[in-house]
Length: 445
Image (cartoon, rainbow, N blue to C red; front, side, top):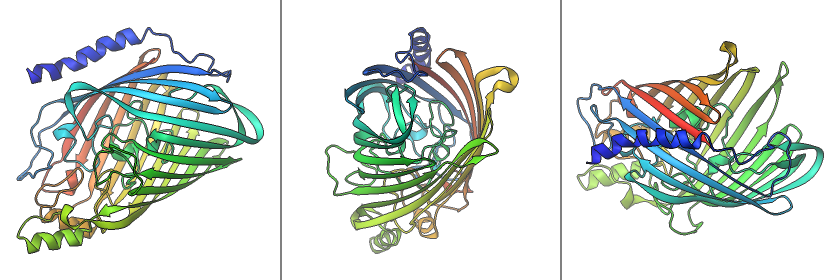
């Protein structure tokens, strides 16, 4: 019965998509910037993936299995926004989720499905992932139209401005954004393509947290600062507001142009503070107790930091390139995101103008993820991380190729075909390589 339920979900999603695709978009006048005092919009996304069989002489508790079924994730998101006073918007989001990533989202540091959370379920369930206030303050300069969209009312905003956001939302709604690689519902799917691999940003098991951010924009630069709640323990759930474990973020964005084409360069630094274990202490604990390394008994209040360089550049009106390089303090366990200490990703996106398909998109990306020698020793001795743990480790960098084609079907509806080739999954050259084939259906309404 469970298998039948899982296989029926893509068909159900297709039916829902057909109905939703004829619903008018709620935020008209988005180009004029005409002020609306409320908005209601939503989206539906289904991602279905199948992996190839691959060589694996051994497997651990958190390994990607060499043989496995097709997996899928479906999410239906509804967003309601209201202007509460001049320059201030309140947004609330309801989301219905269903499905699993491979192995319940385990076995790859660069995980293959950006729509998969760390909590999976065959049965659809309701969450309220976002509720926040955004206050915009005009400082000076020309007034520019702001297009309506998800979590954004149409209106106008001065070129120089302050924007303050407070509540529950995703840190990556504001930090480490990239026009070409950041949204698994519209562009790439791999976690370490859509986000910087070693950016251990604050998040619960679904990717959201409580906190606040301030953005100051002047001419060709923006400075952002944010303070957020970490999970009470690494990779945990957040059930109440408590900033005893916290994350501080600072990002400088500069917007140079190249031959008349816009670009962005972002420099991000972050610092996490909470109860976390060092790999050396976890190894020592395992040796003293004749067991595999364990992080929970040796966690102490400490800090972990990292940096990200994030670049995007338009080369032509229909071609853009991007790159991210990131690294973090590598002697301690990952707290929230995924088991990566250094990551480099590069890629390109091309719009379909060149073959008279303006709404179609082609994307190509390359990624290399690495872990430190301390992390290598920990995993080689059988340690478990956030997403990986083969029980043994013959180390090599994890390398990823991702290619996708997004086909526009009708207004606000697209069907994407995605391929990923992952060499040394979970940094283990004894296992893999693995090919992953995916289809994504996405509807905005």
